[in-house]
Length: 125
Image 1 (cartoon, helix red, strand yellow):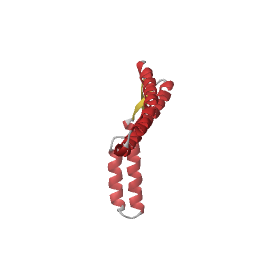
Image 2: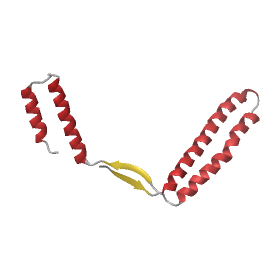
Image 3: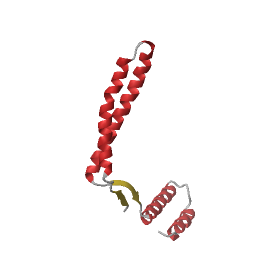
């Protein structure tokens, strides 16, 4: 069985996430304003800039809302630690099954099968 590692977020993190949401919402209309303010040849470039600006603001808002939702749970999972014994047992069983399959398909002889099986069984589980 694998153990999960958790981290508890620091208290100021909630304030930073909320401020990111507020800044994202305030900056969102500025992207639209760039298109209306621009004139002449600059208008297509302003439109491209506005699309990138709006996408950035939207991404910042969406990410902040997701993180805020995770913070309500109280802690983040940052990783897993796998038990080496489980991994080796699974590896040995997989190797034995593969060896059995090779024998059934007559790709190895009974003698080769016996030797290899004995070799696998001698390994530390």
